[in-house]
Length: 420
Ligand code: RNT
Ligand code: ZN
Image (cartoon, rainbow, N blue to C red; front, side, top):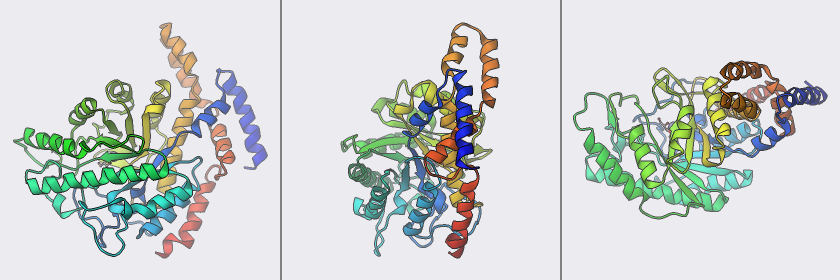
């Protein structure tokens, strides 16, 4: 499609939206101000660069063997930059502690420092983007038995507490250097595979560990702490210490951010409905936008009803200011850069969809008790020409329009990733 056609289609779309009282110019202006935090771990199957062997078990697993994954931080940065070049707008990058660059000598996780992430920070500065961070409580011998911050062994528990303390300092340094707060998100795999007698003890220890990690005050202009629950994991099917109730209570009581991962609840439960509830009691949210399929919580995000519902809630409730949007999925069976771009573009499309909604009209019908009109309108707006607005948005942000981005990925694959 040439530029003139895209422009013309946009003008026609504007007329159609105007009939609903919606101004697409405003929608795309707002969209350009919403950063999405792209997660580093889709680029290398959650391996990290701590050691040669990469992932060593402990609660997280990517499946698939598509060739060309990033083998070093330099490769991962290059791949991520390629992905960013195909996604409209300025976004963020979210890394895990295991993506450190120790510079020759291995560093234990209770010893890591901001300097081990200096090259990431420089890279983000060059790109003009913010960064987010995560302690890594998995893929480690001290996590091999499935417990970390809730461990009954005081030495092991303390080791992981110290890791958390180090990570908040790294988050602080990242936020200070980049001029935008770094969200440091705690997720632990702790749980039990089978019948569990003591559900209380590990939760008491987890609460204690979190209190210890969060004890040192850190300026929220630099670092924000978030806690992430999960219903079950592979190997922790019966009991997860950090359940939703646990972290909702913890975040509400201590003023921490709550992380809602779209794949961490019962399959018919959607996080969209949780947003307006939890934001009554916690200051801010971190979303891990993901796509659960049966027992896997981490399929590549696509523009489905669940994703639209999340975006609709954020826009309708004016929650965007209090919500940090991040992605969390890993698929090693397809081109990893294509996975990133697909998920990021889907998230943006969902937000655009929500920003183009004639919410005032829908609300009016609802408030008047006119539920037939509400339902009829909700169906009608589904065929409004959002695609024309999206194409125009991509054009204006100098990224490929339509499927053309995939050609770029294939070219990069031929020239770069397939040679690894
Ligand atoms: C795991 C959590 C967690 C991780 C990342 C790698 O179930 O969703 O957020 O996916 O930290
Ligand atoms: Zn997550």
